Length: 262
Image (cartoon, rainbow, N blue to C red; front, side):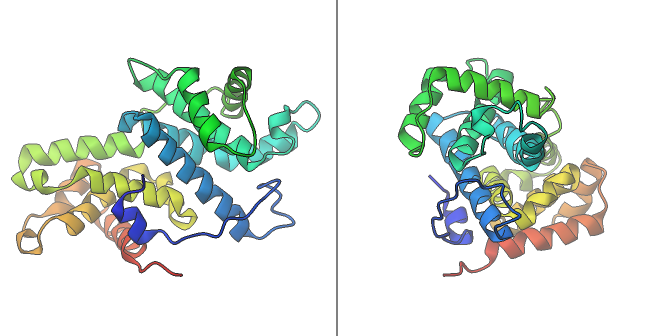
């Protein structure tokens, strides 16, 4: 389920059937963005349904949203002659399958009890309406996913890790750290992924982690206890510039707190 914070900040998008979400030469950027948002919502909700640890979910989001999705169109164009049927064309159902593959790979890396293909297939059978995928399709999709990423699947430098470490450091030096709700931090991360205009913030991972923590502080800590110098603490924790953090925090709050448009 989507959190209350996400419900308050994410506007309803009209469902649009798209044969090929990457055919942007003949469709508006808005439509491409709509597909991206729907697929990322699919990934987030699937991770919740599978009850994976947060590190698995955010590793999967990093692999899919930051690395796979931005280059799959180019990979498809460069491999038209030898391309797999999942890429000819890349349909929304294919992207949903690849998002499950991202969760699967992340669980193998981060979880001591990785997800079975049976569990992933069960989610696909229930939630992907356009296409029925077999166990073999999952194996082939995983191979394609790895090829697209050139087998670079490290997740040691994702925002979630920096954010978690920063909150631990804050709790060690100040009791105010106990008042910061980490769930709000994760809700903000989800929202930033789903909004294309803010997803680029993930390119600066240290400053984004610091900014999410400050934004969560502003949202969850009572205003009368704001005396703690949160900005100097987080900027030194991740070696970020204070003005850069302030700018990103403003951007985050603008998107998190904006009224939902009809």
